[in-house]
Length: 412
Image (cartoon, rainbow, N blue to C red; front, top):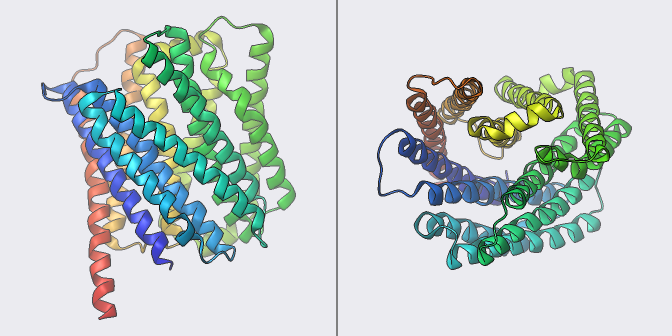
């Protein structure tokens, strides 16, 4: 076990616990009075820290770990400054946004975070090209860092509109969705797929089929952004591109399912049952996400979906928690990058229950809003789900500390 991988992943999981804690405060503020908290500013802190402090920090660590796996034993030493820089900018956004919102200091930290992502992208691309042993995963990782860089266009457009106070609602929303799309469906998704593909090769998956999957998803990523703009008046060619993107993604996912099914016996022999179930939940969440995307091709459904906040929040949490976060956690403990103790397992189970509860409640709230119905005590129930998420991650982090102490005692 590489101590550098473990250390940085432990930091990432601690950051996830902080994200969950802020989620509890946000839900409490919605349900009860908490005048000391500015909801809008804290929400900015929550989302920025979730992206940079949790997902990006964890993915950078896992991508560097991929280099060490392929023979680059000095990778963590060379990337140490980048990892610390990303962590610094993440914590900078965490502590500035709640107090000042979008102001000079918070904008400096968020801008520096983007520059760190450029720094990582350039360095990582070069290191991938230097690898003597590599596979199709490298293509996924290269696409991921490109999409991460592309996503910053949306962030800079938002910053310009806020700085000039020239906010046009359509352009403002389009910029937000641009950033979110290339983060969620570009940087996050392509990193996870690259890590998955690297493991599938080890179990005997077909190289040819996995290459096709990459071509399908990379071809769909840019036009799939247009799904986020169907609430605008769009020409026919625009709509056709959206339909093609949806079909390409569905085809890619079906091939992955078929490839995985063929090598399932080998997977079951080597992967613990516990993480098998986590991966299955992750796959179910991704299937739901792709089905919802397909449904949003219908313009009337797209307008409805984007018009109701619980539906948007539910969808974003489905992807960030149900797909990306569950995958990262499953991957970490399947590869034993952090030992899976009984305490950690209990924490992950509780956290997973929290994800499911949160999604079910947001779905119920979203459907009720469509019919202008009010669900009694729904905000209290969502607060309860947020508490479950937090305590699940709190127990996971406590389990890590006990494991570290046990390891130190063994060394003594």
